[in-house]
Amino acid sequence: MKLMNRNFVLVVIGQIISLFGNSILRFALPLYLLDATGSSVVFGAAMACSFIPMALLSPVGGLLADRINKKNIMVFLDFSTALLTVLFLLGIHVYSPVMLVTMVMIILSGIQAVYQPSVQASMPLLQEKENLMTANAIINQINALSGLLGPVAGGIVYGVWGLTPVVAAGCVCFFLSAVMEIFIRIPDVKQKAEKSIWATVKLDMGSSVNYIRKEQPVIKKVVVLIAFFNLFLTSLIIVGVPVIVKIYLGLSSQLYGYAQGFGAAGGLIGGVLTGILAGKLKIQKAWKLLLWTSFALFPMGAILALPVPAMAAYIVMTLCYGVIMMIATMFSVQMLAYVQEVTPVRLVGKVISMAMAVSMCAQPVGQAMYGVLFDKLGHVPYLVVGGALVVTAGTVIMARHIFAGIKTGREQAAKIAEIDLV
Image 1 (cartoon, rainbow, N blue to C red):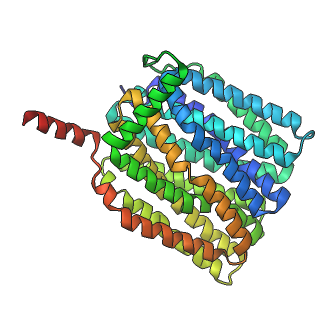
Image 2 (cartoon, rainbow, N blue to C red; image 1 turned 90 degrees about the vertical axis):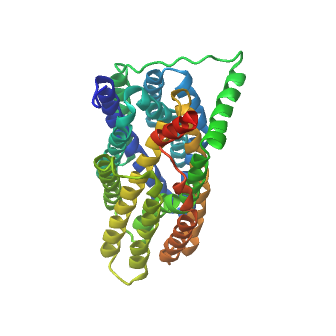
Image 3 (tube, helix red, strand yellow; image 1 turned 90 degrees about the horizontal axis):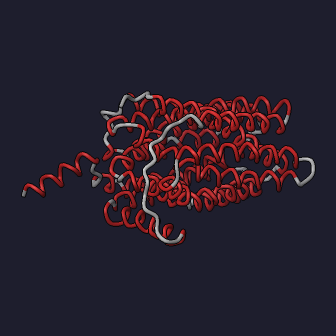
C-alpha cells in the first residue's frame, strides 16, 4: 500500500479543512474571554473547564473508534460541530456571551476528544507499518499548518470585525469537512460485543488498561511523565502566552495571533523534520527532546526579566514558543508512531485515547494554577517561567532512564522469536 493512497489523501484533505475551522475557533473564543474580562483567573478557569471533557471523553472516543466505523464518527461529529456554531451565532445576542463562549469551548473540547481517536486509529488501517511515522508526521504537519493559518487569519478577522465572522467561517469549514469525509473508505474491523453496553465498555476499558500496565508498562511511565509536563509546561504556554502578550506587554490581538501562528509554524517544522529523519530518530533518546523543550523556556524568562521594549520581549518570546512547539511535535510524533506500532489493531484506538486521557488529566489543573499565578505574579512573569523551567528540566533528567527500556515493534518481535527458538 503506497503512502499517499486515495483514502489517506481524503483523510488529509478533511483534516486540513476541519482543523483550520477548529483552529480559528480555539484562537478566537478564549481571546474573546480574555478581552471581555481582562482577568487571567477567569481565562485560566475557562481554559481548564474546556480541557476537562478532553481528558474524560478521550477513552470514550477510543472505545467508539474501535467499535464503530471511524468514517461515520468523523462525519457525524463534523456535522454536529457545524450545527453547534450555528446555534452559537443564534444565541450570542440572547444569552451572556461569556457563559455561552465557555459552554461552546467545553462542548468543542468534548467533540474533539471523541473525534481525534478515530483519526489516529485509522492510520494503521490505511498505512503499512513502515509508513506509520511518516503518515503521523503528515497529520501533525496538517495540524500545525492549520494552527499556523488559523490564528493569523483569526487574529486579523477578530481584530477588525469581531467574533461573529470567525465563528461563521468555522461553521463553513466543519460542514465542508463532513462532506469530504463521506467519501473516505476505512476498513471496518468488527469486534464481538458483550451482552450489554456497560459490559462492553468495562471489557474494552479493562483490556486497554491491562495492555498498558502489563504488556507495555513503559507506555504507562512515559504517559505519567507527559502528564507532569502538561501540568507545568504545556499549561504555562496555553495560559501564559496570551496573558503575557495581551496584559503584561499590552500588545494587540493581531500580534497574539501571529505568536500563535509562529508556534504552529514550529510544530509544522517539527513534523517535517520528523518525517525526514524518521529512519534516524531513536525512541530511546526521545527524552532529550523533552529536556530541550524545557531549556527553551530560559530565553523567554530572561527577556521578561530585562528592561527591554515590549516588542523585543514579544519577538524573543515568540521565537521560544516556536522552538518549543517544534521540539514537542517531534516528540509527540515519535511516541504516537511507537504506540501504533506495538499495539494490536483491535486495541489501538482505546490505548491511544487512554494514554491521551491520562496525559491530559493534569492540564486543567495546570491552567487554573497558572491563571492564579499570573494574577498574583503578573508583574514578575519571569518567576513563573523560571519555576516551570527548573521543575520540568529536573524531572526529565531524573526520568531519562524510562526511555532506555523502550523497544520498537520489530525489536519486540525479534525478542519473542529468540525465546521461541530457545
